[in-house]
Figure 1 (cartoon, rainbow, N blue to C red):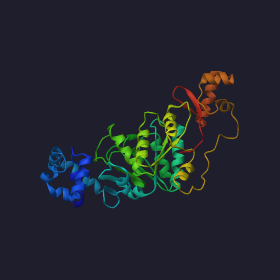
Figure 2 (cartoon, rainbow, N blue to C red):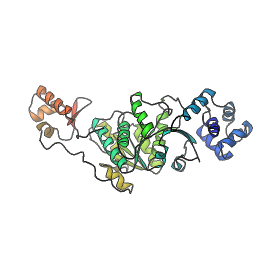
Figure 3 (cartoon, one colour):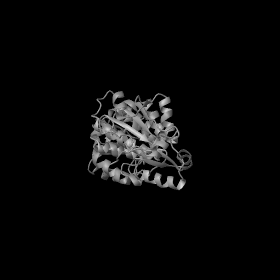
Figure 4 (cartoon, one colour):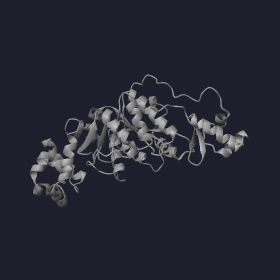
Length: 362
């Protein structure tokens, strides 16, 4: 544990930027050499206020808390140049963390992986699509990387965990701080069966500026990024932007032209992202062997329902149903409620209904 202390002295000091940490490592060669150099020599490499901050050192309570956490099962501080640190970070991310925290199966960080990200306010169909594709890709040998957010991220993690290759969560909080709280159970499962990583000090609370920053690590760990449901002003598009800058493949799942959650995906496709309908589309693009075909999610059951025929594949309001079917609003509401309970239609914001595929989420 002693070799960890110089890294904590470098990375836990407020006011010492990531750029300064990289400069110091490049100049002195190791965290221990930095610790031995002293303030005068530090000031020749970084700004004087950063040298003074290093001399003051990190908060002792945070150091103690971190050392105690690192004594836990499968808890690690992965340092640049040390075993377990993903080399693709240093090769593809210009501002890669010099050290970061990981809990769980750290071998997943160097295994082939794909990021799946999307809206926190996902539709049921979008969550089903993310889960289904994530599980198929996991079975095909790709660990699924995402950000533990509600909606698409959570569905992708669960799909990855259900497959053979598991899943990795990159956090915008400390590695001991599950966020959002509703995903605490998923956080625990990922820590036990997959991996949870963070570049932020332990105990770091959620802050808006942390999440765009962590997105570069989501893409940096992955061979590509698949976006499932994203508005035009979306953090998922930030992840896709990082992926393009890092030389990763960018994929997008199209959706209804009527849904604001499809706008971001459609924009990505217009900009050159690969259109994805199945997991095989990703595997072919990455030159990986296609998995054995899984059970198809399928279309609607063979028995025809007049309401589904009237609905087609675009959202429709009760008034539009009345116009197309001639049925009364009360009758339609009852029948649509039944179809919704059967999982054959879903109610969208604004009171419109949309057909949904019948897929099971574990």
